Amino acid sequence: MTAATAIDAGRLQEWMRGAVPGFRGPLSVEPMSGGQSNPTYRLAAPSGRYVLRRKPPGKLLPSAHAVDREFRVMKALYGSAVPVPRMLALCTDDSVVGTMFYVMDHVDGRVLYDPRLPEQSPAERAAMFDDMNRVIAALHQVDPATVGLGDYGRPGNYFTRQFTRWSQQYRASETETIESMDKLIEWLPRHIPAGDETAIVHGDYRMDNLIFHPTEPRVVAVVDWELSTLGHPLGDFAYHVMTWRFTPELFRGLAGADLRALGIPEEQAYIDVYCRRTGRAGIDHWDFYMAFVMFRMAAIFQGIMGRVRDGTATDARAREAGAKARPVAELAWRQVERMRRAA
Image (cartoon, rainbow, N blue to C red; front, side, top):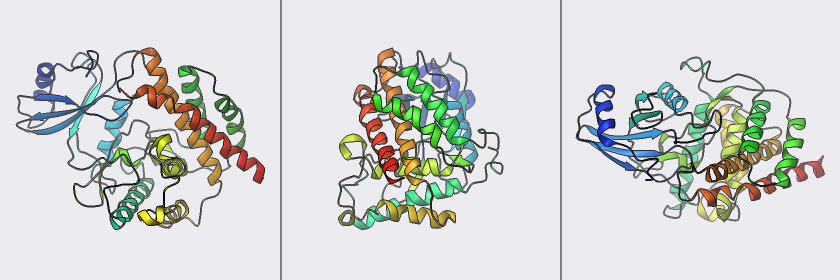
């Protein structure tokens, strides 16, 4: 924990006594590892265990680190087919810990960073991947209006809006010229497929943003909803499936692994299961969606490098993560070049 992200446990305890039902001190605060964006802390007290998630201090990109949106979407989804922690309280008063934050219940379970799941058996891997698929399919079938999220984003033109947002974020955090990103910024908006759909999208649905049951192969909570909005479900799903295109060295990927031996479904088989669960005959323009989400991921990595430049990065591995912007952009552009050759 740096001086900038340190929390005054006494001040926080005073706030929790009035804001969190049933809270009893004394309170201990411990930073949690993982996550490049919003600092996260484990809280312990006689009344129970909690998790606090806050905006980072310092200069921030516009619309980034929206912990209030995280709080809202998880509160709305609690009790639905999408498992989320129970939200307890949101604090918009910066004087308590220095920035806006929320407190939620602590969820017991496993956060797994390597999608090859080296500690699991082939049967367990198959079951865990199937449950990840089940949960994202369930999310995309939630009616936003029914859970009070009808105004959670602007319906329609999702890819155009996402392109505008992430191009701007990329330029705002640009630390070097990446030729592949410049090419993607020129090519992608001219090739967005016709048609649109609207669903609640997580925006960063990866294995390490899920909590699995301590012993069973099922998802008990989806966390890190900072990038959630109303958007195109296939963009959200493609971002999730990007794991199959990345090598482990590039970013927690499956490319090059012997999936059959591991018990992990091939990319197309995983897509087919999602389509069956969501009532689709198939997915047109899949290659575009993959190129787009790789571009978006490169912009996210560049945003991390921008925080390194600005001195606001809160994770010790931020520079290493930020350096992945170039290889991910190059992978995205190679995807575009394959599309162009096939046209």
